[in-house]
Length: 142
Image 1: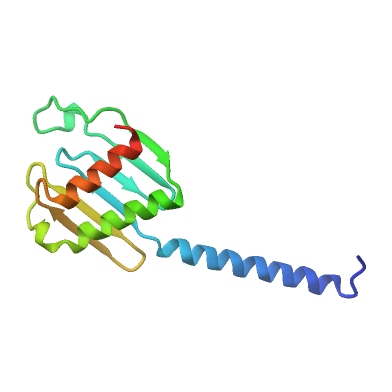
Image 2: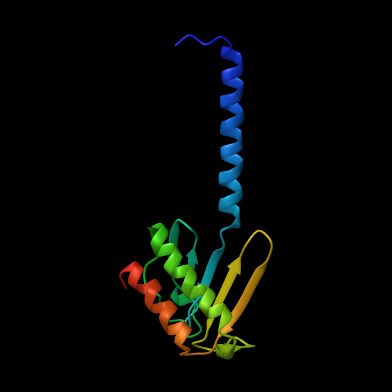
């Protein structure tokens, strides 16, 4: 193809790529990140793309003997992330299952976005805690 204004096409292409990159970054930064600490203080970190499990080591446990096992990380599909996101949001909304202080076997949910951070504590054996832990462990094959 023979273009009459090749520099204009290059500038337009560069501008378009810059706009697309900006849009993509803006959309990604609005996606929340979640952290869940289970009743034994094992940590689960969830982003739109991955689930990371960071277990408690015996030297970090209250008994000095408990181990949460081996660390793990998996990639998440869009559907898996959306399913987890729904469970996290349900837990955050379920105020009747919230308690004010962290106690043994309670679960702590933290949601972080570009505009705020929300942290709640789920009472031990709350339905939302059970559903969330089941989903997280299921994805990790535990």
